[in-house]
Image (cartoon, rainbow, N blue to C red):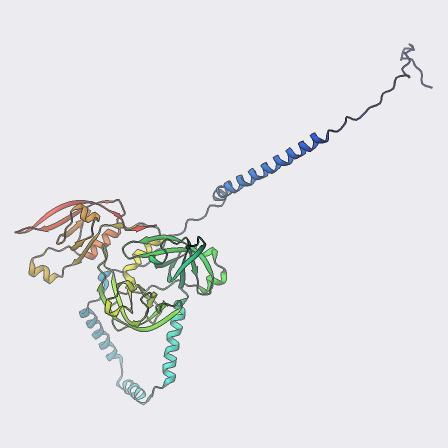
Length: 448
């Protein structure tokens, strides 16, 4: 039995009669439910805040950790208008080539070839082979043709929302590895809320507008290559841009691809009937190509040579009234620099003049100075506001001598909107020409 003493044998008080019972504190269920609800509500609020914070900051973190590479600039080979051969030069070259071939041609071989040609008879199978060959070329070109559809929402009389859309043909003019750049008539995508692009294999995706040129009415839109499957990227091709300035094109067989007949995917064959018609658009020297292909007044797409090279962008708005259904196109040579600027998002400068180059013999016979001869100026254009008049001859821009209208256009293409350029003008007076120095503030010929 345990002793009731301390360590010094002193007797301790008897505490056996004391007993203690521990009771649990009563649970307040209302408080517990309230705290649980508050905790649960705060957890939801915290989760929502965290989610929105992540969504807002995720692009920032992604850009910092994995910065997206800036797309490479598009560069299209530009042709020089002066590179075009004159008829005399072409005749001399053809004679020279013929002379060389005649020297290398043995008379025995010539006789054999003449005999073989005379004995051969053409039949329907030859025609079939020729058409099959043309179809093969057009199929190759079609891989670079897309259907561009502008979609916008509207409301009818009964306040019911519906979608309206219109389609046209566009052409893939370039790619930089990240984007496809597509040339398309601006009128087809005006006021579009969404731009849909249908590729050669039927793949549909959306596009973003780059820039629109107010002078030609052409736009460039872009599609991310990453939005397309590997299979589609393998099937799609970038168009081969040829030349509308290489010698004489009149009489050249061509193919119209896209929707020349007003139907997507239609093709037509014919020849070029004229090529030197100037469109007369301001600040430019665009040329019109006409054909004998009977198409739709709403036709769009491209015309190509038999090598599949694009030599013109179909634009039916420049047709004469008596040939309004004949396919015509803007020559590709002068469009290359424009497409390059629009693809790279570079705004073009606007002066607002129409002009021409006076032939040398006229300059000599009429004692007219060399330069860019101004025929008209656009209303309220920078040129008109600065005092440029019809009949003026521009001889220099920003210290650079100008001897032709083509040089003036090329120099203007190197300028930017809001640039202030110093222009030297010769204006005819009663006895001679008076030299004037005029400062002009350029505006923009493009918009988003």
